Image 1: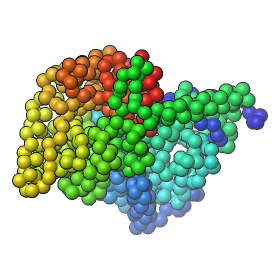
Image 2 (image 1 turned 90 degrees about the horizontal axis):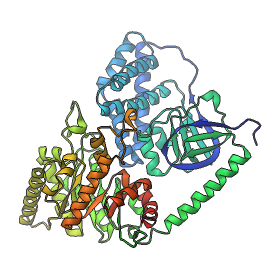
Image 3 (image 1 turned 60 degrees about the vertical axis):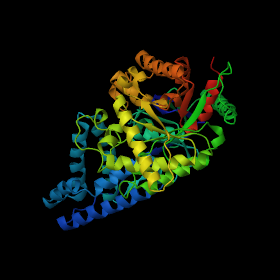
Image 4 (image 1 turned 30 degrees about the horizontal axis):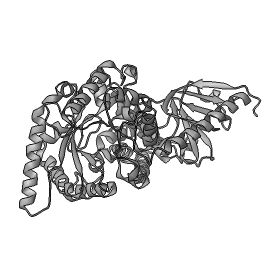
Length: 536
């Protein structure tokens, strides 16, 4: 037991959970200052550090999930961009050391991104800062202690935690993390939630207040890090941890059964698939099928836009995994915060309201037809449902249906087996939700992430308006109720596949609004079923 008094540091919850362990205080480790070389020598240092950073990123990309890989690929692409590197080289040519030139040039780039009016570019500033620090450490000849092996049971505590650093850490050894900077809507917060790693951000502490190796409790439910907890505090949290473990076992008991409310009403529970690599760890019998497959994972890798064969292989693998259960695949939802080089437009002043989702697909029929051909061929494998993102007007749905039918006819004429799948739409644009009866869709799925964003006029990644981004805003619930009621009256399925469904505190409101189908993150399936069982 420590002789130091208990100290509690408040923070924001980024990924829920509890952890009891010892603080692993991670500081940047740098070598001693070295003499500056000639400009030629400094250029060699810069190029060597860039090559080493690229190799590190490539290793991380190889084992990262689709969303994380996209972040890392963005950084790797920057390292090959002369527009980024030429100003650094120019500074070196004027006599600056490589590390100083790199730092100054990148700080300027980051400041430009941070000052951009568009939220997308402001979010990219974090990725640029991550890349700046990675190369700076290599130029300094040191490295980051984050990469060092962790003692089992440690709690990562540091100033910041970039996405690439998060991916480097051994989260089987670390029980959770607490960082001074960051946002609950940041990429690293998304990664932590996907892996079930407890994480708090905005920790109100600095290095002088924290003690490396001190016993600590990470409360990523109330939002605090307790250093040197008293015996009473420790005992209280041990009881809570035991309760959480018992609760997790109770929730897991629901996995093998259909989701029923307390009144015995059936609620379909699907899973969201961002990356097919997760599927071997999920028992298909634990869910009613796949409610959302984000096909962006096919378009974010190297090798350019995926061809028909590659897409067909991925879709057929998904159908085989489902074993006859329905599989919903969303057509490419590029644009907004998901740019794809060579496909999405550059320089849009507001990408979230620009050429994205189905709008982009219809504008690029050469790319869209390839995806529709692969989907039509996969449709003979089982119950395939194809969902269109960002639909605003009925004419967009009608045009897609006509193109789809033409594709099916062409395939059959070529002697290639194909079928027309059910064609549905994501409801995420308020105009579509208000006019839902005008859309001739076979099914509807509410995309709550964007719907909340557009109804509240608050960016989901913008910390400054985080309080306004409220899924329980009456206007949001009214639109969900309107769409659910339309589905009930017309006999068409209405589900919800956004983050609202994966968060148990929102499920009662969704069921109150009339929804009887949800699609959740696989890691949240047991919790969602347990919450549904207690409803009513």
